[in-house]
Image (cartoon, rainbow, N blue to C red; front, side):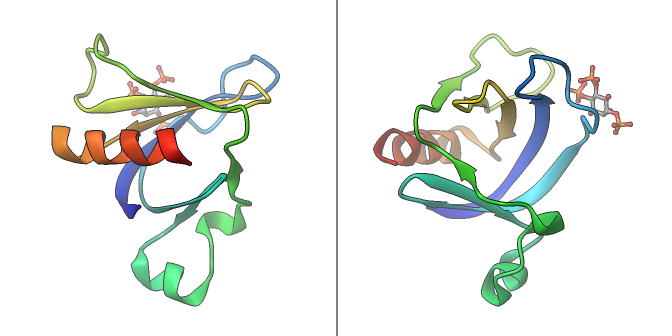
Length: 106
Ligand code: I3P
């Protein structure tokens, strides 16, 4: 599963709020056990991740669709094993379901 998703870093692993809390439209690529982010599909083609970030490890991570989230629609929360949290906004419900199914398998 891969495609453009809007992402916000919400919490650091330490339990404090993330410093850069902006939403970024990123080309996300899900492989078994890891989620990588790129500026766009071209950067993915070149293997250059967004801001040089390492892939997020999905072992012991949880993915939860935020049905009560008021600010935006089609949002899910990814919580990593270290406690850090990222919000992902998909363009529509179908995309959200697609990502959710892929996350469940990854
Ligand atoms: C953030 C940006 C986010 C907003 C966040 C702001 O500012 O406006 O969209 O989250 O609010 O801090 P900046 O771009 O200057 O970093 P929401 O869209 O979820 O409101 P927050 O700190 O309350 O999460």
